[in-house]
Length: 92
Image (tube, rainbow, N blue to C red; front, side):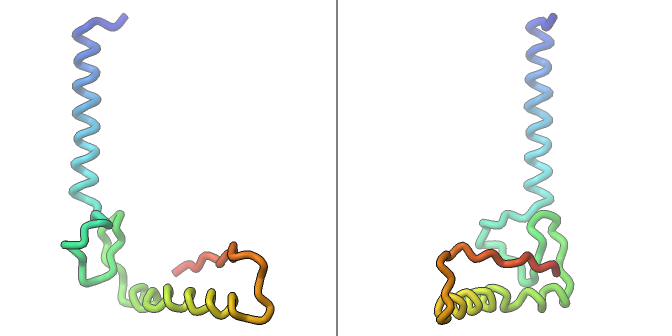
């Protein structure tokens, strides 16, 4: 049976553990919405690991390429009936 003291201790430990997790995440992970501390290089927002030059180069222009492909497909004579076009996931 849970006594009042043990219940309070449990809540204190839970709160301490939650705070430790929050602190760890704040210290170890980059905030993707922080526009004041934008790195000069491509960085994994979860691990803070800097991408290699090869990965960085391969990522350049991906958005523009996909947008151009989408526009070209939508304006083609054989226009699909749905905008729900699925693109294959590209592994880098």
